[in-house]
Length: 403
Ligand SMILES: *Cc1c(COP(=O)(O)O)cnc(C)c1O
Image 1 (cartoon, rainbow, N blue to C red):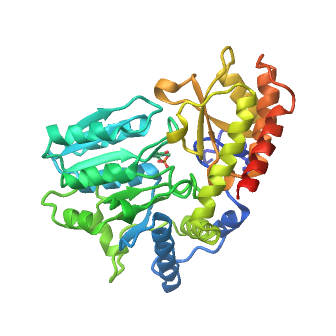
Image 2: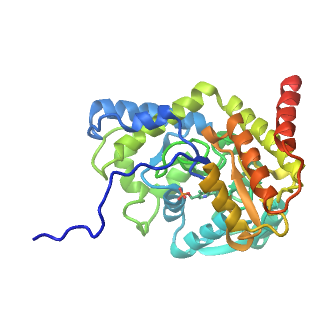
Image 3: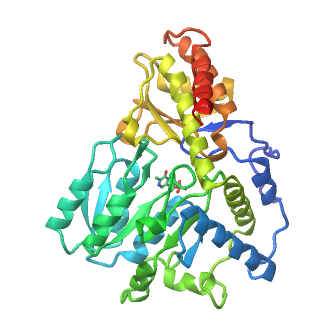
């Protein structure tokens, strides 16, 4: 007798949810259907043609002409790691800006590559302070790389990537930019910034399935990678080996590309291109404004000041006396709404309401405010019934007048 599973397995049907957390975001039927198309070989000429289109769509999303622009077969964390293992050699000094969880992961990456991190800390919930970066370069003129997170998903703060990249360039350093949460939600202008290595994730404002990391490298970065005299510590993420598959000329086996996920990414990027980047950015702003107006009716305050606030990631203070876990559980179980908890030092103190990509829709804003009013009402937060939704509709109306 063969061993049998100790449970009685059933086909899995996930519940319907509104994904209003820090990712994954809601996925449109259009993108989900792309996943179900027939799998073909990753060297099939038809697949190669689709990938050329995908790369071109990625260049549009990143606003770059960088030849080396492609999706890493792995989540955003793999894109992050690919930047570090290729651009950081043993002993290299790397200035890392840390104003949240993901900046902390960058420090980890530098250390594991044998680099020497120079850490610049900023208060969680505030953007990276460019003056501190200038000071760090003055103290460490030999720093090879500046690494920072454009949109800190753990806090909801947006940093000034243009200025930070300029400072690095003035000191002859390369830049590693985390654009996981920013791409598709707020402007990411790789060529204008002259950023050297920029990575993102499929499941945030691109609203594709998790597990892919769009990435783009400048010519300058590619030269540095080609000139390495030490092998990168990672075989899988070694750009020098991957160039054989993603390079312009030959295509040879490196690893089996996740074909169906790549169809889905292609579709989600096509959705973005058809909407247009500027329209996508203004849709994110518009839904954020409406959510903000509704939350204000419940006396809820934002963690980040208005000038650095991400429209796609609304981090808010949990009202006093309210049980964090219980509220999130009720929102999920009774209203089908997932919102994000606080991470690290902000755990238990904040919520993170994501309005990313396909999740950034009027019906989600209204559903979220309606549910929060009910649930928070039962936790003693006093608010006039229906006032939050009414305020959201007023905010939408004001915006359409403004246009
Ligand atoms: C989500 C996220 C990541 C990691 O992406 P995964 O796909 O979860 O590996 C990295 N950086 C930022 C800013 C993120 O929001």
